[in-house]
Image (cartoon, rainbow, N blue to C red; front, top):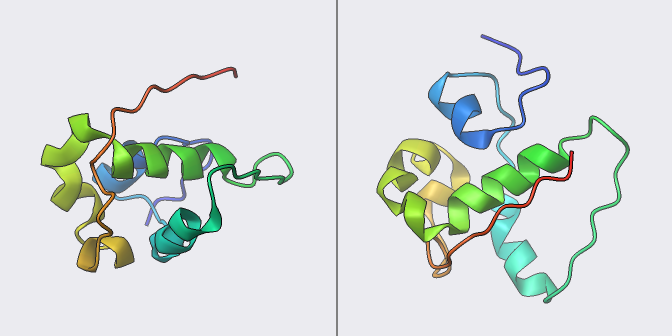
Length: 94
């Protein structure tokens, strides 16, 4: 088991079989929470990984990889109607 220190790309984390604590079951709660969300967490708390996971979940361009990335996770067993529905524009200010 590889520990994903410093890896913030969800697709890399899953395809290269790093250890991942599945938090995808919270996606339905995020969809019901409202239009604007604010995540306040200290550094190295997985904010970038969370956004990468959401990018891969909602991006239409990654629909062909949905089963590969999410098939073994909680959201892969019961996806919401919103999965792979949007064009996602990623901005990285790091």
